[in-house]
Image (cartoon, rainbow, N blue to C red; front, top):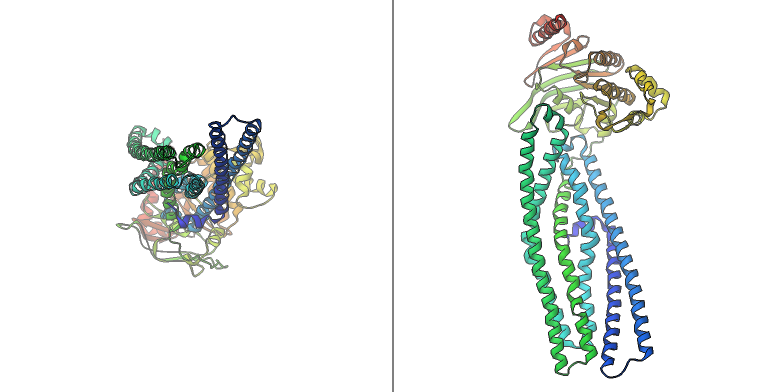
Length: 574
């Protein structure tokens, strides 16, 4: 139950654990003094009346020892807090830094819900492990030995018997450990599965309501919850059974020690004071180890949580890319293949070129692989085959910071953070308010904000207090402030009103005059002015050229474009 790697990882907690153990040991010594004073006082009553000085000395000794124990308890509590604090800070920092190192593609290797659970609940379990279990573990080793040395001066046989009975508790713990480890591993597996299901259903609750699928998902979640309830009941049953066994050993051992001490008294091998002294301390032989047993299950839970944490921390990281994107930002994809599932390839030998300062569009039916290309170009998906270069540098050799600095991605559902408009904009670039207002004017959002609370207008979680069009305009304003050299717009005008779509497309066209723009759009009317259009079908690039050239080819693009125009004209007539 001592994980050397875990303790070594949070090495700064060692001094607090040592301080905690020392405080408890001082408290134990104070208790020994109190019990000795009481035993001597009561033993003296058998031979003579108590003197006033004896009573005063007893009261004074007890008062001092109580004060020492109070200070020791406060110190122990403080050391426990400082130990847990250092553990939480260190481990959460390590988890956060690990996710940052994994980069934008972290979710290819670990689920977001699992990261949330181990960094919150998992670390909380280790807080108890460091703050309570480890100090108790070392104290439980020292306390019986201290009491053994003290009681040996009174009666060796009783001291030896009491000490020999103490190891029966850790033996019982060891017998339970193998079963408990497997059980708690299943518990954490089911816990993360339930958390993943809950998070997904919570995020998609509105969609579930719209399609009246909430009952189906509710039933699905009830199944997961029932599995979690069963494994939780098994854990509680295991804890209750082991605690019962430890209680029988602890109190049975103390009772046996007391009986033996009384027998020694009857044989004349010990006086009244000595007999009382050992009887009063018999339980203290077992209480520390019994307390350790009660922390054992918490520690096992912590160990299961640490396994999950180290599994995350041990995820293989490719050598950090160090190359920077230079002035040449031409993008070239050759023989690009990608699979989310090894049995189903999404992209098949895709070849594309995006010249610096060009306006390039990628079109095609839903599911043809357009957004997958965008994810690869932004570094979100790394497990591709073929070649992707930016400025003749392989994308996997380019540092993520350089990639993020050079490429700005705007999706159809860009994330707007809870806070003020100013806070959302300043994360892109630290500029003054005049620059913020100029940018908001470009996306036609300034008038709306001036009618509200200006740059201090509060945005609720997921921007639910503004319209979809306003949310996309705000995302576009933030993207403009980032001032990168490459912009990727992935269905940035979908699911918004026509006015907002026209405003955003006008701004995209303006950006394309000075930046490299890659536009992914289902609406082909938006790509008419593109310098080059790539048409994708079933993960392949089937056509490429300008709008005019593609219409002349009378191929896939022409068919899609004409059908869309006919549908839009019909809608207008209606």
